[in-house]
Each structure stands twice: as C-alpha cells, then as structure tokens.
Amino acid sequence: MKFSNVRLITKSDTSEYNRGLALCTACYVLWGIFPLYWKLLENVPSLFILANRALWSAIFLTIFCVIWNRKTFIRVISNRTIVKHMLLSGTLITMNWGTFIYAVNNGYLIESSLGYYINPLVNIVMGMVFFKERLNLYEKISATLAFAGVMYMTFSYGSLPVISLALALTFSLYGVVKKKAGLPVVSALALENIMILPVVFIYFTWTFANTPETFHNLTVTETALLATGGLVTAVPLLMFAKAVKSISYITVGFLQYIGPTLQLIIAVLVFHEKFSSSHWICFGLIWAGLTVFTFSTVRK
Image 1 (cartoon, helix red, strand yellow):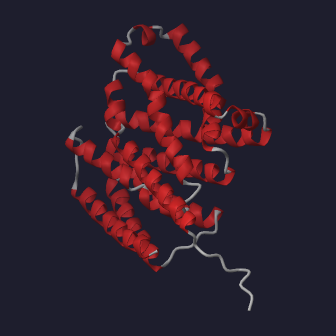
Image 2 (cartoon, one colour):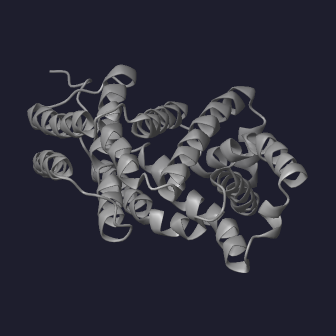
Image 3 (cartoon, helix red, strand yellow):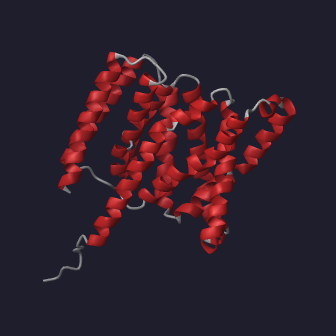
C-alpha cells in the first residue's frame, strides 16, 4: 500500500497554527481599541494624520530591518517584482488607513465598524476565489448567520454605506496581496510604507506652502502622538502579516469580527453614537455565527 499523498499533522503544524491564531486575535483586538488613540488627534486634519502615519511607520520599520535583518531587507528592496507587489499593498493599506481615520474623527465609527463586519465576508469570498479554500458545514452555517446580520444592518442603514464598503474591500484585497506574496514579514511591510513616501512628501510640501498653520498649530502632545502613530500602526500590521501566512484566509475572516465589535462598543459607550435596534439584530446574528465557528475550530 502506498501513502505518498498522506500528510500527517505534526506538533509543529499545530504550534504554527496556534501561533498564527494568537497573533491574528491580538492584532484585531488592537485595531478594535485604536479609535481611542486616533480620537486624541481629532483636531488634526485626517490627511495630515495619514501622511504622518505612513512616514513614521516607514522610519520605524526601516530602522528595525537595518538593525535586525539587513541582508533580507536589501534582497527584498532590490527585487522589482516584490517592489511592484508592495506598491500595490502599500496603496491599498493607505486607502484603508485614510478612510478609517476620517471615519473616526468625523463621527462615523459605527459605519466604520460595519465596514469591518462586512470585510470577513469579503475575505471568505477571496479565500475561495484566490486560494481555493472551502467551507465545512459549520463554517457555512457561521457565514450564513454573519451574512444575514450584515445584510440586515446594511439595508436598515437606509443608503449605500460608502465608508463601510471602502474599508471592507481595501483591507480584504490588502490581505490577499500579502498572503500571495509570501514575503519576509518585516522587510515587506517596511517596503510597502517606503513606496508611498514620495506621495507623503508631496503632500507635506503642498501643506506647508498653502496651510502652514497645520504644522504651527500642533501641540506637543499631538506631535508626540503623530510620531508614535508609526509604532502603533506597524505592530498590529506585523502581527497580521505573520498570521496570514500560517492560518487560512477564512479563519482570518471570522477572527476579524473582534475588531469591529470593540469599535462598536467604543462608538456607543465612549463616543455616544446612536445604537439602534438594527445594530442589536446584526450584532446578535454575527456573534451567533462566531459561536458556531468557534465550535468548529475547537473540533478541528
């Protein structure tokens, strides 16, 4: 008898999967509570926050790469194909950041959380299309419950939730690019931030020439928060990039509900945005789906 097509699940496989699961969970928890951080900069223009976020992320990650893994970093930045991939991923994550910061500082955090509720459903589709992943029975039930909740909330919203859809599509496509590229996590993340620096410097030059008060009116606290934003941005992205390499994209999709749920709680309890009966129904259906998905994961 031949067993050439049989692959045993080793202790190493399980350990890698559990590590990816833990990292992915942690990054979504961080993303869920980050509105509290960005809200401290509500008096600063959203584009200015976005530009600083990209600049300081690039600086922090480049220093990290030069100190810890210089050879890998040089190899990554010298490869034209990799550069093209990272230009695409850098553009997608910048669009996502910009939309999110605008939503937080302009009273649309609930719409932002809806976007990240929709995102896992997009991830499931992306996982099936790009990575040939398939749902088991429990995952199908979970996806159906989550889809019903999101669709109910979307139709109850009364209009096309542009912010929600923009957040969902940009981040899902970003994850696909990262997973397909399969590059060293830190070096790739540093490169994608470096790729958008020319646009950042053009924006800073234009702002200084036309609205110099944007720079002059910054308080010491705001300046410190803008600089630290690079670290705040980079750490969960590193976790995410590492996690998607060792767990399925469908699993990533379901775990992502952690972030918008925390955002929704913050929006209602801290920022006092309106929480309607539609939100309750959506929330209940999604968490019912998550319960089924958790049961399926434990069985595996």
